[in-house]
Amino acid sequence: MPVKTYKPYTPSRRFITTQDFSDITKEKPEKSLTIGLKKTGGRNNTGMVMVRHIGGGHKRKYRIIDFKRDKYNVPAVVSSIEYDPNRNARIALLNYKDGEKRYIVAPEGLKVGDEVVSGLKDIPVKVGNAMPLSQIPDGTFVCCVEMRPGCGAQFARAAGTAAQVMGKEGKYVLLKMPSGELRKVLSNCFATIGRVGNAEYNTITLGNAGRSRHLGIRPTVRGTAMNPVDHPLGGGRGRSKGNNVPRSPWNQPSKGLKTRKKNKIWDWMIVQDRRKGKV
Image (cartoon, rainbow, N blue to C red; front, side, top):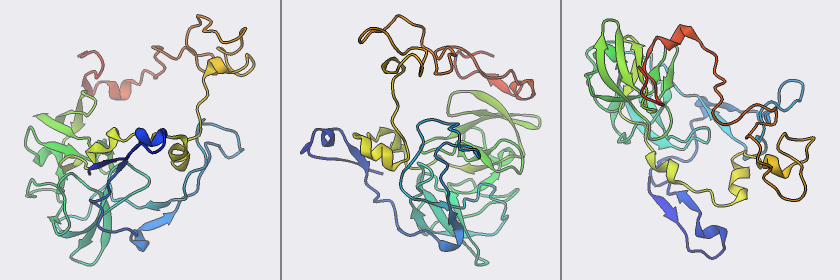
């Protein structure tokens, strides 16, 4: 996906970059694989804001993605590469030999006309094919990896991401995650060969406020610009730093405080921490 730049005929246009969309082969989605998508505005069932900075944005349809790849040993042909407004990766429409259609997250290098297949064993190791981790050679890059067998892909689904198979230990496979973390995953979990496409997405610069609003992102106001009633860092005489410890609106230290629960159920599966190389 090439990135487009523009002549700076306005101040904001100087920094704006956009996607080229030359890799898209079909504009309208498959009707049988789309459903309506209702926006929440970050609110719960009582109307209270649960997540700030969410609201508005362009109307979307949700594309039903096959994250389980559980149609075994039935070849499928890639009929189109499409845009998905609900994720930063591209999606590929598969036409199976028996007539069924499904969407998958498109790996890098997958093209219209390519044939892909998923299965439990004896599946060729090529881009787009899905199989258990036990069948994938060491050193292979994979995406859309299951966390638990049969639950559907949860790891390495974002644009440009991939996990690497580092080795096998009994019923577990050692994976190097996109974050650098080394983690054990059950060997019968499914994964797709290849790296997720649209890798240049993280180089896109929105450039102005309007593009953020079209994406459903509302403005973020600094705590120091608020009143004392609204934020722990608000108030003061004039514009001042205040020399305060950075805090959230709920007075919780916002830099460095560990808030994650010590969940011992899964911690033992992490071989090496992604932050400090802890073992």
